[in-house]
Length: 399
Image 1 (spheres, rainbow, N blue to C red):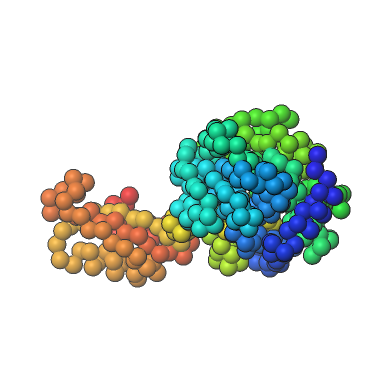
Image 2: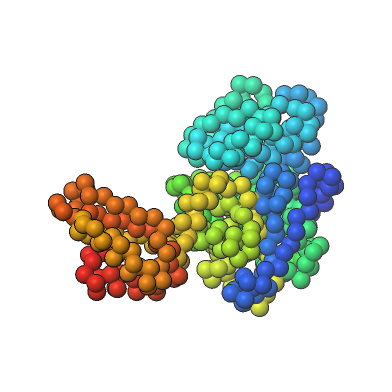
């Protein structure tokens, strides 16, 4: 079992390597949630996530013979960058197996630290199997992303920093994949302040630790694609599960829409760029899944390595869910002035036209008519509904 002593030693190892990230009070979230909400900004850590802490601490503890063999790891992206960064610092070779659909930005960043990247499998677990195969062939040291005492101790330094900055913390809300982050934070925080509550958050599309925690035994689950790719794990770790049973108070799950909206809200209201895994903690709070009223609550923003293309999709999805962007289709007569009339009606009712697709060749429009598809910028859900009602009143068939 990892101890507070291990975590304190990890802090000494990391003191000239990592950044002590900020603990930032956010008034907007505090007012909405009814608590004093602080964001632990691990998205601003070197390599863009907390993973550097555990990876570096593990590699620092390898002996010379192990370092000569090089290291290998499997990762959806953030652990990959942490291992590659640490390996470069110790001048040892590194091979990283990443899922085939890992964000291009994470693959490129990992390669920029000098790692040999192999793309294999659809999810983390398949990449992990490939990494184990390579390890058995080469003798390289496998750096586990979560189920390793030194990795857990490294992640636990976040718990030390939180209580150093805000000892009166009542609740710490932590993203969970395999469980290394929450295990380290929970051991550190509860060893110093036993009454602090530790709440984990997992993606509904990959709920292995949630299901294991609720059932009391390790449970493998189906792992559907998630925008929280950094915590998409089929099965939790053996060590992390035992720690979580002893130290974590509860685990909740959030769905894809809630994660997407949290990413957008963090961007707009806090000017914080978070990846899907990094936003699940604030998603749980914004959706009222954890009772933190009138308490000091710390939300771990665990990473900010989101691909810009995914960010664009997430923003669109979030805007649609909030009613600030809508898609409208209709059919109009294909003659001069009819499109102008439609667009004028929309503008007069406060919507901004972002794009227009005019198609007279589709089978969905009879001869002499054209199919029109519009993307509109709107104010809220009520505004969207009002626009639809106005269009129908004016004789347009809306779909």
